[in-house]
Length: 362
Image (cartoon, rainbow, N blue to C red; front, side, top):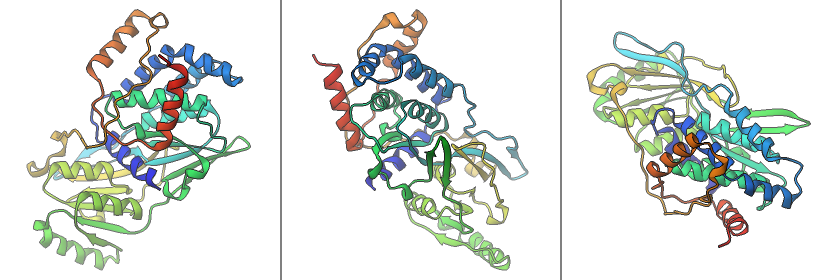
């Protein structure tokens, strides 16, 4: 499924963006864009004869907005003599949600943005001209304003979603939620990014063999290592490196219960509790010495994509905004004009053009 690669890239872009309060800034802006397009929503509701109001849409957004945000929350992060360690609540990855209800679409989109998961809506009743797709356009064009990939959120026909490729599947039957999440394996992976650590790794191998711990040693590029870890979902993944940027990216992106830097697999723990459908618990450990001090490390992730510059919802209706909200929105649009260059999935391009022509004829 080609869309999975787009989702993986989108997940990487969003989770390596370290701007403080980023999700709140994005959601505040989306709320303004929803209000700004009240007239367009009401036209679509009337045309589709939908049994819903614009206030229902706003209420669904506000309800999800108020839910607790656990992103990277930890209650036991600490500095030891030589290492920092702790466990954090982190996003699961690529989540697919099977629903035709536009209010559910809004709630899961908001939850995905807060938790930094990618959210794909799988619809058994898929129509290009729909309220769900109108919501999608407003959300993803707002994401692009903050240089977050448009592919972070998708809506696809049911038959286009290969469920086995996703990290979590959420389905509804008779109003009952059914969550299926890929489980972590008992395997462990040691990634050698820098072979200057080979002597230490030999000692580690002997320790692990004595304890009958199952492990595999890999090398190569960071991208290939992360891809293998995502596929294997090991209990523990550790990297040996002297590069703080690589170490930071590995800790952030490796899909494992325990993710370490220059640390023994023997420190791994079983972490099974989850606060909700958007997170799992990940233990991290890394050295506190000067050679690789991650607490002082900051990196902005960039990538090269094909350019798509259009922003559909540029029509203004300032009567719907209070003066202070107009200032917020103007500041965002003046200072965060997207330079994002990317390939978006073909389903999005089709619905983008159809809704644009319908509501924004010149």
